[in-house]
Amino acid sequence: MSLSPLDSPLWSGLFGDPDLSAMLGDEALLAAMVRVEVALAQACAQVGIVPAEAAREMATALADYRPDPAALAEGAARDGVAVPALLADLRARLSSEASQALHWGATSQDIVDSATALVVSEALALFDRRLVTLGRRLGALAEAEADTVMAARTRSQIGLPTTFGALLAVWGQPVLDARDRLAMLKPAVARLSLHGAVGSDAALGDRAAAVRETMGATLGLTVEDLASHARRERIVDLGAQSTALCGSLGKIGLDVVTLTQSGIAEVKIAGGGSSTMPHKSNPVAAEALVSLARHCAHLQGSLFESALHGQFRDGAAWALEWMSLRPILVATGAALRLAQQMLDGLEADAGQMRANLDAAGFGPYAERAIFTLAETIPRDAAKTAVRDALATPDPHRALLAAHPELESRALTDPLAAAGQAPKLARAFAQRCKLECGDKT
Image (cartoon, rainbow, N blue to C red; front, top):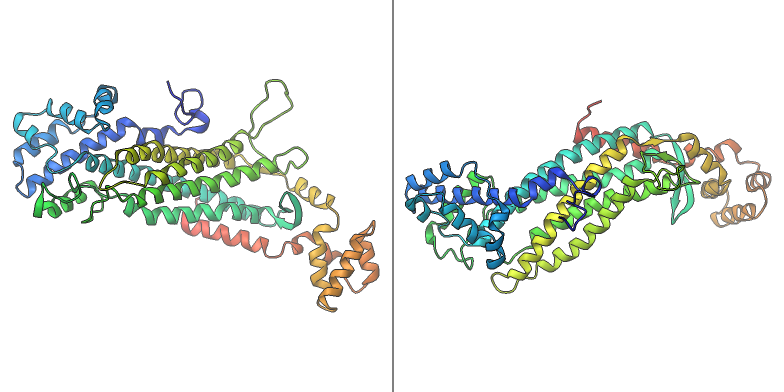
């Protein structure tokens, strides 16, 4: 049974992500906790704190062990964290000597936080691969549609001519930027935690730094001298950057909902059916992107609250982090998956885009007319002339009659009126090739 569409059997095909759920789920987290415990024993053995034979036995006995979350559930509920129950389970699989070497100098939060860093690092690597694939698709579309004129809408109203390629660049720039931000954040998030009960290295003493360095090298995690038990800004930042990415994908979905809308119909995507209206093709994937973005935004609020840790550690705040971070990452992964699927099947209707622009009449060219006239007459006079023309039944003809020096075709050339839009689209496409590789 599940209460979240992110992992429910009914809804996860739309709102979930099997790959991210497997990477970030309880089984994966517990397996990562075992890895951390083994690495801790090996590091302690290397500096002479525990017997080397005990560390070797632990590494062999627990190499492929994946604890059963259900078997640890009672202990987790009792202790508020799964580590004590996990340690009892691990000790039952070890000799007395190896058992004594387990969990030396660590506290439960050290193990959970380090394991979280491991699974989050794997998730971020998957994000990066998907961002590269998505960047290639957006870049290819932007290049192909660089000169495809359409109406640019602001506040739901037609403003000026632009090109679909320029809109694709607007969609895609935040996607590429998100990749850069997540790459910069990863070393701070992929961080080892090993500082003991109150973050003072009381158990490991002056050998703590050496143990951390060895563990960090083994696990591929960064190390630092000061405990992060109550400093959660990097976790909050990870959630914020993921939420921002999910929001950027939601913006694509929102635009696609508009562009597929009856009466606009400028793009087509694979849609879903209605139970009673067979003529409908609902933009399900686009709508789901919007829902996931809004869901992430609410979860991020919870993650911000989880950063308020009292004193040196705070169980209530820590638990709230568990309830928020992994769902944010799964929702973002689902949004990346959905965006790719939607854009792979997206078709632009250039004819309909041009027809919708033409139907708006002279209005989308009014700004161009003002600035063209302002080259020869004062700008205020140019604005008055265009406004007067717009008040007539045929503004284009009226303006040309009042100012015959204007060249009719150039005035209402949609591609010329789109300004730098084609150039912006091609520049974005080039960035995609440079940063994501050109696989065409």
